[in-house]
Length: 428
Image 1 (tube, one colour):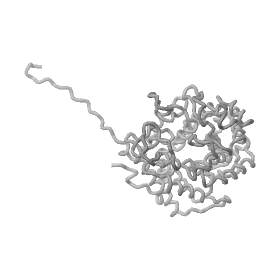
Image 2 (cartoon, rainbow, N blue to C red; image 1 turned 60 degrees about the vertical axis):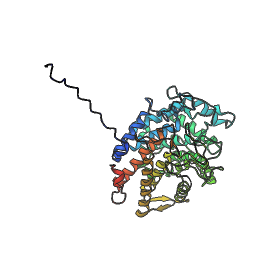
Image 3 (cartoon, one colour; image 1 turned 90 degrees about the vertical axis):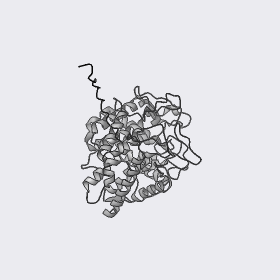
Image 4 (cartoon, one colour; image 1 turned 135 degrees about the horizontal axis):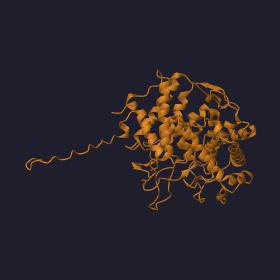
C-alpha cells in the first residue's frame, strides 16, 4: 500500500438491536417467558423462587427452593407438553419429602404444637443443592403444599404417568395422607406463611388432593379414560366428607380475619373444588376488592412490600401473579359447557356466557403483560410504580405461560367463538 493511500478502517461489528419482549407475537412471548423460567430451573428439576440472593444482607434469600413454588413453577411444562420435566420436578419434591419422612410419620401420629414445635413440621423451603431445611423459625406448617402434591401426583398418574412412581413412593404418599388425616382441616400458616389460622384455601387444597385419590368420579371429566388409583393410596369417604364440611364452614371467607384472599383462586384452579356459584362469588370479591393496576392485592391491609420498596400511606403491594391467576380461572370457566351446583348437579353454560368468560381472561392477560418488564419478567409485586426485588418470580412466570397458552388453546379449538384480539396476538 503506498504511503499516500488512506488506511482502511475496520468495519464496526453490527450490534443487534434489543427487541422489547412486548414487540413479539403472543406465541413467541410465551416461548421467551419459558426461557426465563428455564433459567430458574436447577439440574435436579427444582426451581429457585427468584434470583435474589440477599448478598447485601437485606433479608431472606429467594434463590432457594420453596416446595409450593417448585410445583407451581413446573406446572407450565404440562401446558407446553413437557411432561418429562414436570415429572422430574415432582420426583424432586418426593426426594425432599423423603429427607423429612420421619417428621411426616411422627406428625401423622402426634400433632406438633403449631407455635412452639415448628421444628417438628415439614419445612416449606430447603437449600437448592443439599435439600436440607434452611430455618425452622417461621410458619412452615402449610397444608396447601401437601394438598397440591397429592392432587397433582394423582392427576399425573391418571394421565398415564404412574410408571414413574415406585412402591416406595406410594408408601411415602400414604404417610402424607396420614399426615393430612391428622391435621388437614385445622389451623395452619397458609399460602402466605402467616397465621396460624384456619384457611379455606388450605382446606380446599387438601380436599382437592384427597378427592383426587378418593377416585369416585369427581374429577372424571378431566380424563379420557378412568384410571383406578384409589387402591394405591386409599382415602376414606369419611375424610372427604369431613373436608367438605370444614371447607363449607369457612366459605366464602378465607379465614376469620380475611373475608377474601388471592389464595382462594386456587379453589377454582387448579382444584375446581367449589361449586359454580361459589366460584363466581370468589371472583367477584377479588375483582371488586383486591384488583389494582399492576396486580392483585393478596388480602385487605396486606403489609408485606418486599425489600427496597417504600409504600405511601395506605398503599398495598399488588402482585401481577394474581392477574395471571384470574385469567386462568376465567379460561377454565370458558373451557367447558357445564359446571356443577352445591348438590353436584350440572349447570349448563351457553356459548354467550363462555365467550364473556373468555373475554375476561383476555382482559386480565393484557393487564398482566402490561405489568411485565421489557425483558418479559413477571415481578413478584409492585408498590405503586416501585418493582419488588424478587424479579422474575418463578411461579408467576409459570402462570404467565399457562394463562397465555390457555388462551391460544381455546382460540384454536373454538375459533368461531373465542377470538384473541389482533393487538394481543401481534405487537407492533
